Image (cartoon, rainbow, N blue to C red):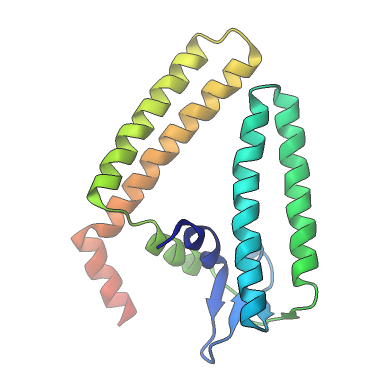
Length: 182
C-alpha cells in the first residue's frame, strides 16, 4: 500500500451499501457521509497534505527554538482543524460509529512491511536512538536537549513500528485474524 493510504484511509469506513463514511477525529467524533468520489479524493488529499505539514514543519522549527516549535505545532493544529471543518461542513452526519478496534485493524493492515524493510527499520531506529542519546548527553543548549529527546523517541517509535509489522506477519497472529474474519 502507498504511504498516503497509511495516513488517510484508516479514517474511513465503507458501509454495506458502498458509501464512504469519514471520521475526521477517529473514534472521538461522529462520522460524515461522503457524497461523491470527488469529495472522497479531496478529503484524502487534505488528510495527506496536513499529515506532512504537521510532521515536518514543526520539526524544522525545533532546531531554532522550543517556543517556536510549540507555536508552529499549535498554529498548524488549529489550521488543520479549521480546514477540516470547512471541508466537512456540508457533509451529512452519520449514525455509524467507528470503534477503536476497527481503527487498530485498519491501521495494522497498513503497517506490514517486508523482512528487508523490517530489518532496515530496526537498524535505522537503533542508529537514530543512539544519536539522540549522544545529543542528549552532550547537550550544549536547551535546543540540543529537546532534539536529543525527540530523536531518541523517533528511533524507539521506528523500532516499535517494525515490531508491530513483524507481529502482524507472525503465523499465530495470521491464524487468529483468519478465524475472526470468518
